[in-house]
Length: 159
Image (cartoon, rainbow, N blue to C red; front, side, top):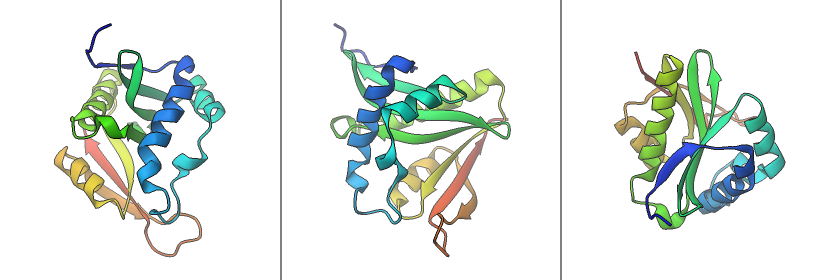
């Protein structure tokens, strides 16, 4: 087997591994985000259903093991990405950046004008990463039941 990291489009067969990757990556936020991350509500069935319809995913794997993933779907002429996840053992290697670059390349191939994401207000380190990659805040919103912003919407223009 090769030790080469491969980024590829996910298939329905990857749904359970994608869930495991998201769960492992988001575990650091358990009990720390208010409201709790929706990642903890994900199921294999829900991920498979998304992959079977309009959504997509990109996975990063080495030797058949998924080390990172990101879910995508088109919205208003842009490609939205969410559930950006890198397992703890692969952090600090630039994998999140590579996944985001793969999303941007996918958006360009589709002829889309930009890429969007949502990031929690509390996750300032993630915001810094996105800002460093050219994303800019376009709005803030509150999760249901909150009267203050809990999430920042960001966008990067590709044109």
